[in-house]
Image (cartoon, rainbow, N blue to C red; front, top):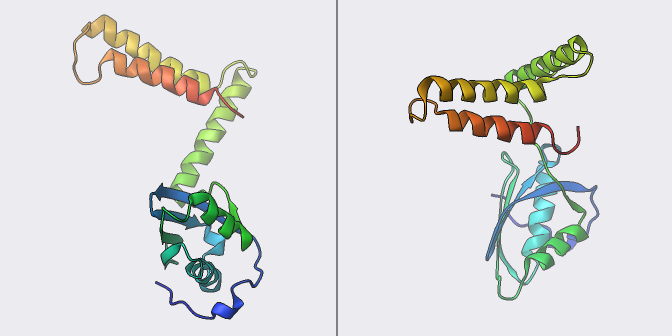
Length: 175
């Protein structure tokens, strides 16, 4: 936890700091700071500025995890007031992704490469976003034919749901 120091420099301007709201419950707000902004001076500046606000009772920071925990009087201070206060010091609210491990990155690249190969092999008519749900759907039908409606290891309806759900997730939104 950082100590509160140098309240005279609370309005000192900083470059924009990317933050994500992790949780918001009455009287308590948890924020996550982007990895590139997890520096002592930046988080200290945020903690100092927030502590100086009358409706905020406590601010705790964890630089290693990039976490800022704000305890506030939810009767007198609303979430929108706290967010406006943060925007005043250059906070930008955004979706922050945590860094991938080397293994996760390798798997992602391998799947992307495989998907591109499948698209080239089929002249763009089929890709993994179609083949994966199709494969799960085929397994669902196979389980239904062989096992009937038994509720055993992996029932047909679970595979059918995964086929439907993955098809929707892979084929909606931006590509």
